[in-house]
Every structure is written in C-alpha cells, then in structure tokens.
Amino acid sequence: MNKIKLVITDVDGTLVTTEKALRPSAVAAVRKLRDRGIGFTICSSRPPFGLCMMRDALQIELPFGGYNGGSIVEPDLTVIEQVCIPPEVARRAVDLFHENGVSTWVFVGNEWVILDRNGDHVDHEIHTIDVPPTVVSAYTDYHFSAVGKIVGASNNHDLIAKVEKIMQEALGHSAHAARSQAYYCDVIAPGISKGRIVELLGERLGLARDEIAVLGDMHNDLDMFAAAGFPIAMGNAPDAVKAKAKVATLGTNDQDGWAEAIDQYVLPG
Image (tube, rainbow, N blue to C red; front, side, top):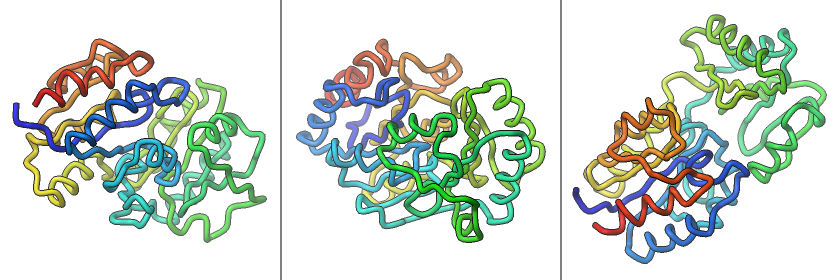
C-alpha cells in the first residue's frame, strides 16, 4: 500500500457515535494525522454550516463537503462548488411532503428553514448540527432559490417509507430522494457524489488516488470508496458496503473503530 497522505471521512455512523459525539480516541487519532503531516477532512449529508463544530473540534484546515458532496466549501464556508435543487423542483418536493402529512425543513444558504418549531425531530437536528432553525410562517421564493437539501421528517416510519417511493416516482431524475434514517427522507440535487471531494482534493494537493484513504458506513459513501485508493468500511456498515471496501474495522462508531482504523491502516505507512 502506498503511503497515505490524505484521509477523508464520513461523519454520522462513522466518525461520531450514535449520540453524535466525538470519541476521545477519534480526536486523538486526528491529532496523530496532523502531527504526521497527513491531510484530514470530512464529507457528510449534513449542511456545511452544520459541520462547523466538527471543523473547530478537529482543527480542519482543508475544504470539506456537505449535502453528500453537493456543496464543497473552504473552512470559512466560502463555496468552492455547489449543486442546488432547481427552484421549481424544490417547491414541488415540499408540496409533496405536505400533501402526505410530512413536515419539511429547507436548507438554503447558511440556514435551515422550518414551518413548525415543535415538529418531529427538530430538537434532534439542533443537537446534531448545533445550529437553531429559522422558523417562518410560509416558504417564499427566496427559500427555494438555492436549496441544498430538503428533509421530510416524521416519527411515522412507515409513512416516511411510503413517501420516499412517492417522491422518487414524482420527481424522477429531477432530484434524488432517499431515506437517510427511518424518520428522514432527504431530497437533494441529482448527480451529487461524495466522490467529487476525493477528486477535487486529489487534484488540489497533487495526490494519486492510492494516497487517499476514506472511511464510511453507508451506501452514500460508495462513490467516495470508488474514487479513493484505500476505502475503509466501519464495523457497523452493512455487508454490501463492506464488500466495496479494502478492509472493515472490527469496532463500530460507538466503540473505537474509527481510531483503530487510523492506527492500523493509515499511520503505519
């Protein structure tokens, strides 16, 4: 294996615990990477502004990705690349969620906009991204002007599963709709890939793909796996994801799996 010079990791289910916390071992492992001169950054389905606490806690100095690579930003949130949902598609998606009794969140610019402060999972999202929502009485044209992601949230998991299929059939190739959790259905722009941040940073840093390691746990990480030379799956990943990785950790994200992967597969090089 070539010496790894850059590590890019997914966040939820990979770098942080189920309770959205950084384990001390993960923080220490990132410090080891920095001390060895190995680059480090993150790519997540979260909005870029919802990754600032990770940026600060881990002293990230490289660009990072939000919306599954749909928005790649500098550490100060200056946009490098961004793919937005077309306004008419965003409006249609919101209407479909509402017609089926599902609350919506619209992520636009550096804020997330909601209609119901007491809606399902709002408090959970505040805890996750450490940013309060903007509550409005109705969405306006501005809110659909540059949408990075729309989330339909409900405690009714069967309803979310049903709405996922409705969204996919209604939106077709104009947007990508899929459940990210049993209680969330995410709508993002089509053609988005986490692999793009691997390509962009590889070009920017002059690295070969074999000098880049990536870590992830879900199907939306597979594009990142395909773009990097050394993909690592978490122990909690589904078998289909593990099958696409070079190696899988024994530990999970709720154990020390992430740090163990860095110690075993990245630092020895």
